[in-house]
Image (cartoon, rainbow, N blue to C red; front, top):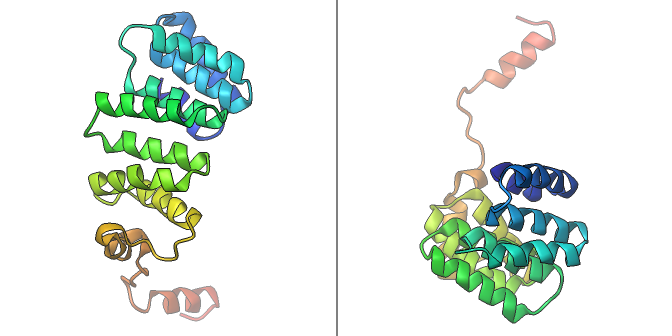
Length: 189
């Protein structure tokens, strides 16, 4: 299932459907695999068939957080009821209330649907829970930019952005190294 979810994240939807079919041959009763294939089909533009797979996944016993997340995101992609999508995200959150990865995925789903104001809260939760995960920071930045805010300042987060290593200017560890490399490549030394 992890490979299929990665293919979906990479935008390789036809490949995700192919691998979903192969996995469902071996594990036909897997709600998570049904949700993966349904999500890939929805993202390919086949909303009706994708919804059937997602509904089938929900109807199996005890749907997982992934099933509810995929169903909610697919409702946003298909421009269906926002209230139903919110309910799906709420059900997923009830199953894993402390999981910042889930909050990140919910925020990413809202960002994909250009619902930046709805994306902000789950992404803030993800950033606070993740210890400054770069992917969470990136998607929070997408939401903040989508809202037209120049500087993100939610709850003192702006300082965190400046302190994070991916935003720092690189320090020179070996002073003079660049000059030595240049002199060797130009024939001196």
